[in-house]
Image 1: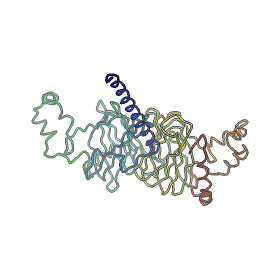
Image 2: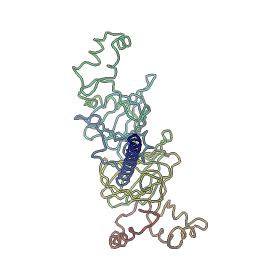
Image 3: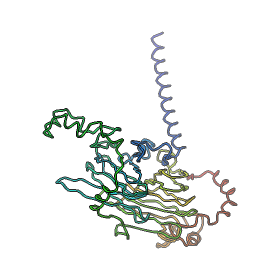
Image 4: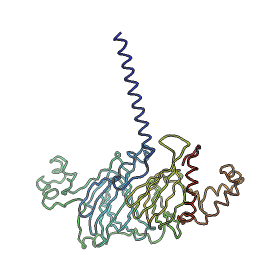
Length: 430
């Protein structure tokens, strides 16, 4: 009798364990659907790799660790570099392709390549529309100088690791913050390589006496002047053929695609009260970084982390250094609550299109109406007739960026009706 009870007891335990695991999984999915998986708050999303009196290096947490919805970004990392005036980031190489965008200040960049080849670049952010960027191939030794005597330098980097999902910076120098990677070799290897005794090698390359405080150091104006002689300017005084720029009195957007990396780089500025009308990208997953200012963003996407025909809105109040991810095909609208500017990186950018859902230009809804029998299709799509839909669409004479305060009072008066409508059941929930 006892023997018969034991299997039943085991089955009961296994059932309860399975039920508990299923409930935990369901709870995690529910928690993720309630939170905003696309929003990275600057207060707790950036990890500091190095910091001293001259600047810092920070990396954003991995996208795929925030949410399974962002797993297609697992091969990409976001890095921020800041430095004080007249400073140098010591020579290093990284196990990642780097795409640098200067967002404030100016930079002298030196790339050291095989066959004793060197390339010098002068990068600046004089104009937020004509921004500078530079690609650094993985494994290329480089160093950065902030040559300005007064202004801080800020660079946003999109890093694409080549070994694994982490980024590693290999510094030649030994400082108070870290050892040179050359020190990790056995003594006989540097002795044979440099044809010198290890004591001399250690004194010249690694001795504690004379070590810098960290990997960002002060540099004098004479050294900066000498480096500047070799630098070729990348400053854009006009738009290149690769640049796609739109804008009006409310805002400006410049986009540039690096086809070799399949990445879109963008710079956007909006005036307080401006609205970037609802739109979506056909292929690109856009990583949006707030440089200065504040904005309200609303993204519409599937409800929960599963295949569904139900949708919900993901909202966030963005401020300086916050990051927001806009997946491909997800409609999004952005309203500037102060003067604000952004840097954006679009992944899978080749053959990508931006589609607007409102406004006079590039509006895909009005394009349907202008097609053969398009008005009949609009009449079947929406509750009003095709003519009524086109009349509504044509009321907005602006494109891309419009006045976000327009009809605000009327919207507030009708808020009670909207709340009542939200309570109705339907196939789509926003």
